[in-house]
Image (cartoon, rainbow, N blue to C red; front, side, top):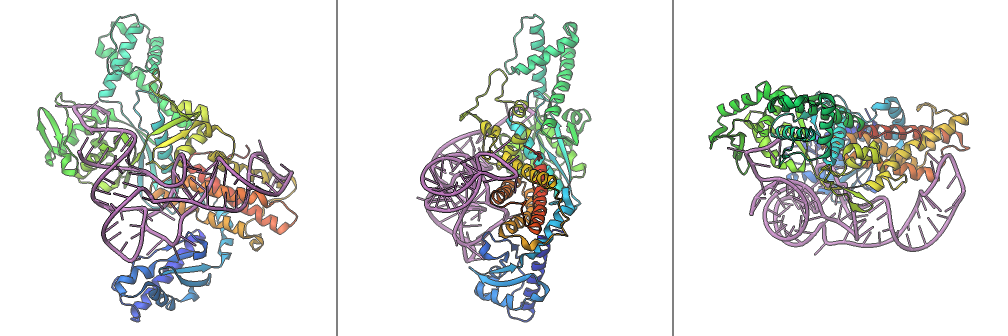
Length: 559
RNA sequence: GCGCCCGUAGCUCAGCAGGAUAGAGCAACGGUUUCCUAAACCGUGUGCCGGGGGUUCGAGUCCCUUCGGGCGCACCA
């Protein structure tokens, strides 16, 4: 276990025991032991750890919090925690613990011993599915898909690292209305390119990529499709185009560092009858009624403003119907938690989706929807406008081409999903410490460079147990202290679905490192100090590398 | 009209599951330095946390309300 958790647990037991004593001896009167926390104060002057136990008891015990704190302390058996050097009551009634910093001396051995696993949590025995991007296979990947990809994949990595059994899934919308229109658009382009004078469908996909796909079709099938009837022709064209688009999506996302465990086809849901089956099940449970020829789901029962159509008057199920079947299918696959990363433009879908889950008898809290707001691209200080030709501003593959996978992923992950984001292309490309991704990666490269210098001079990094950490100064101890936070940061990022915390953490740690680097020398005349600093460098390096890996950014050895 | 997200320093944004005196980067100003990786480092300050009300020992954080911005409200997905 990481040293910081050991201390927290110890303090937790210490306070709980003291509370038990105050109750048993009648010093304090209360029914329920409060759910106090052991936290790390923001301000160093407030100690290494603190607890709010006394303040939580104020009402029950009918006593001033500071007085309660004094009583709790009087019942503490500090002999159990020799690390604690001072306990005090402060502010409105906090109990602050000051701990001998030597506990941090254990940390490098833990970090180096765990290596790639430092920061990971114990196995949780919980299956979690993260579904993200799930872009329509009818066009190029856009910035919304890119942001969703970076966030979803990083979140999945964080959950994985925090000890969950994670599956990544892409839902392929290869059925329904938009595929219909896609087919008509492709067919129209095909016929046009073959010389026919026909109109392009009003709502059709007018982008250049459709034309490119059709050219590929012509290359393979020439004019052979002209003789077919429209139905047959569309089926063939759509099949070809979907394959091509999915290959494109898979490759682009792989270049973006994303690899899925499952590619799940909507079409399969329809063809296997699962969609109609789920509607029937809901009908039997009394959640479906017929009106004006369509079938409606009573989503108003679950807080929606109006009921939602599941089967249209033309007999075809809606996307929503398929999505209900899809989510039922997810739960049947045994996931304890199902997370969907959606664009904010889908937020209207959230409450009825949860409603449908509930109607089917599942706990809707097992479905978590992470909504993310829109992205605006900036180049040269101005917004990059939508291109009429391609229908997008910049596609994900173009973005990777322009700024690189690392910068793109870091920038998307750095911002909280629920704030609108401005993506500065110029900054992302910049090779300076103003560029946050460069700043963090550079810390890693610098450390590797120090190691190269050390080896060239004939020095090796000693094992963590061999060196004497007492020679380290406050700056180094502060860095170690921050490294001790890493497992907790990962855990919070995973639980609160906030991968941006990891990016922030890395910026912070890299900042501490750069600052240290700039006025202290690792390689120096004082051998014991050099040995300790080299080990410290290795703990920083491992932590940065592990953090970067979670957000899908490389940790270069040289820049 | 209804719903969701956002509103924090001049700008871009953090703020962990309410905690103590609200932070970072950039920009601005002042200084140091030419050093294991390259203009980097150190220091300086500004906040009606959009407004109002409430819950709480304690609110930037939770609830209500109001204003402003974005998005959504199809027998589309």
